[in-house]
Amino acid sequence: MKLEMKDSPGQLVAALKPISDVGGNIIAVIHQRDPDSSNHTLNVQIVLTLPEGRLDTLVTLLKEQGVHIQRIGKERLLYKRSVILIGHLMHTNLSDTIDTIDSTGFAEVCEISVSMPAINERSTSRVTIKATNKADMDAAIATLRKVAIQKSLLLIEPLEEVT
Amino acid sequence: MKAVLIGLGSVGRGVAEMIVKKNPRIIITGIADSKSGCICNEGIDLKSVLERKRREGVCGDRSVTADDVIRTAEYDVLIEVTPTNASTGEPALGYIRAALARKKHVVTSNKGPLAIAYHELTTLALKNNVSLRYEATVGGAIPIMHMIEDGLCGNEILAIYGVLNGTCNYILTRMAAEGLTYEQALMEAREMGYAEADPTYDVKGIDAAIKLVILVNTIWGDGLQLSDVDLTGIDLLTPDALRLAEEEDCTIRLIAEAIPRKKILRVSPRLIEKNHPLVVDGTLNALTLETDMAKEITLIGKGAGSIETASAIIGDILYIQQHHGKRT
Image 1: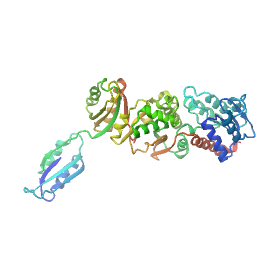
Image 2 (image 1 turned 90 degrees about the vertical axis):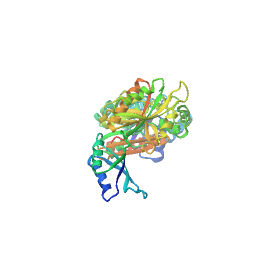
Image 3 (image 1 turned 90 degrees about the horizontal axis):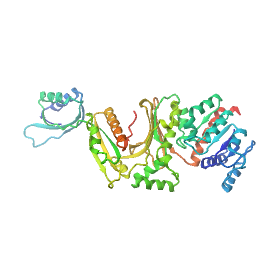
Image 4 (image 1 turned 180 degrees about the vertical axis):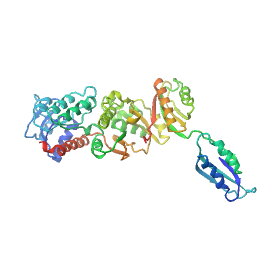
């Protein structure tokens, strides 16, 4: 998120504190002082992760501190894994295959890369899935595994560290 | 210690050559291949047998069979290194039964009998107070069984996974490195002598699955069979699959894995980061054990080869000699 606050001592700390109060985790703080700034404000960009449903609370707390929120960019699902599917992907309705993940509600396909060497030959695709956590990812891949069996597709799953 | 050697293919010759070269106080009193055999209770001159095998293709008298050697020769250990038959385990299964019934130790590189009759054979060995050792069946020269039995004793093994088939690993390495198709890489593997004329057993993942079954039975004693393994081979992989993996700094390897707490027992091609310890090149094997105390241990080594397999077999014989030395 991009924040604007008064350029006075203690303001930055005051703006960061509510993040930990709501259980968030700060990944990066980018703070560049603009020498031309005439209105004595400070622009700060913060990258952070938050538990689901806490964003509204954080916004309220920040406003109470007198911090102006310029922009919030959200990425809802941060756990990403790629799988590879090989087979007659188009004939077996690739968009339906993807929909089985998207319709779970806890995981979605965010990227897909398909290679189709020739008509009637098997195609290969890399499908990147996003989910909130590992358990949801495992469930999403299990769903895809069932679809792959039904549609006679070869699914290549990632090797997960066991621990 | 006296031993009989059944099987004089690549592995058997490797064992005989290393016994000649290293002289580990193992006296061979009987030898048999598929066509002939010889027995001499005072000890056979291995050099001349190897020479005869090379020149004439036989190791002894055509009227002497492997069964004769196993049932009549004087010995402490049967070294059974005949080719694997994955569906019946024979004739090796019969050889091993006969030797155990005579209260002889058995050292084998043969996966068939262990995958099919693990429980029966280990029970028979235990009942007759002899050892049945099979280090050479899994991971070639890698001392995985010694590691499980001795090195990690006291640990609970939670999971095991790895690359157990050198042929598949070679094919995948070449597909990734050169952008070859599966068929091209297989042809190259054949030319290099890494793949059989009928590659089904390797590329469908059957060989890796049999090794996994042997490991699982050894570690957890589950009495599992080949048919319990969820099996996917590498024969349907496309060069595009490896290229798409590469774009994410990953590659594809045939991974055998057993995780009892998740009820996972499978062999399948997997996406794996290129810097992962299990990503080994060529015909190498690699295996990770996950344990409660030692955490993760990964072993990497040559998965096949005449002398490499002989290393595992001689290690087993010497282990028996050290642990049952006073019996002779």
